[in-house]
Each structure stands twice: as C-alpha cells, then as structure tokens.
Length: 284
Image (cartoon, rainbow, N blue to C red):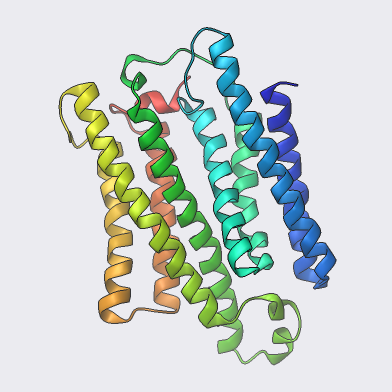
C-alpha cells in the first residue's frame, strides 16, 4: 500500500464522517455521533500513516525530505492538523456536533489536494533545504488549524445567537438543541484562538530565523510575511479586546471568522495570486 491510496482512503473517510455528523445534527442519535467521530479518527489514523509513508517514499526516491515542501503536501498537512485539533477538542469536551462545522474544512482540503493539485514528490528547492522547514511549517499549520476550529465554532455561535435573538423556542427544541450553550461556544472560540495565537507567533519567529538562514535577512516585507503579520494583528486584536474590553459574543465570533479568512488568504491567496520569495509554495 502506498501513500496515494491512503490519502484517497482518508478523503473518503472524511466525506463519510462529515455526512455522519450532518446526520447526527439532524437525528440527534448518539450512536450516529459516535460513528461520525470514530470514522474521523480512522481517517486521521490513515492520514498519519500516509504522511509517514510519503516521507519514506521521498527517501526511497533519493530526495529525502519531510512531506511539507509544496502546495499539495501543505494542504494535506493542513487538513491533518484540523482533524487533530478537533480530535483533541472532542476528547476534552465531547461536543461532537462541532464536527459538522469543522470536518468540511478538512474534507475540502483533502478533496482539492487529491483532485486539483500535482501530487508528485520533487526535490527541495535550495531555500527549503533546512531543518527550519519542519519547525516553521508545523507551528504555523497547527495555529491555522486552531483558527479553523475557532471559525467553525464561531459560525455555530452566530447561528445559535440568531435563533435566540429571534425567540425561536421551537428550534431550540429541535436542531439547535444539539448545539452547546451559547456561552460555551463563546468560550471554546476563545480557547481555540488561545491555542492558535502562540503557535502562529512561533511560526512567525521560526520563519524569520529561516529567512535569515536562507536569504540573509530576518524580514523583507515579502507578501507572505506581510500577510502573516496582518493575521497576527487580527488575532492579537481579538485577544486584546477580549481581555481588556470584555469583547464576547457576536463581535468576537465575527472577528474570529474575519481572522480565519485572512489566514486562508495568507496561506493560499498569497501563494497563488501574489509573487514573492514564497511563490514556490504555489508550484511543484
């Protein structure tokens, strides 16, 4: 069995898991929720094995590097980190309905990677031939994944808040009764960002160290660096407003969603639409 087959299995598992979470949301059947999370865990295990196999395959081909070097590999890794963060959240809090709003992100990433991107293993370009690759990419994408989970939770919050504001008590006894209490959603959004923000900060620091190693300067206002700083400021503003101004509720949820939109542009938009020192990320 090779990594490509396992990645296909992973994509299928995430699809079935997402549909099962939707069914859980509609049916409120505990067994369906349990099946959905078990399928997600199975997909995560298959993807972990596939990433390890791809790493081994690169050494077998004589190019030998971590599978984090091009757009395909980074999208696959991003999907993996999203499911990992969600799994940790599920283990701690058991709010499985959140999977209906998080698993689509992981599925979209895997589907795009498998169907729309070049999957070949290529030698590293000179700028990527550094151990900083691992430190920078892992910290950044774990941070991005936490922001993805926070975005899903924020969408749930806004749906729940809109229903509460409209006084729709019937919906509270139906579909929305599956949602965690609104204060819990607000707190989970904050906790997810509290995980993601220091990881993003580490990602920027390791990226600066890597830039100095590769290009002789810590910061060059490359589009990727600039947008990383914008994302950092958005989430710094979120935490500052939360801690000092008591920002909670809808304002916090909207800021979380805006932050994740900025994150996606930083990750994909810059690579695909802007030129700069990081433009190799959109190739290969």
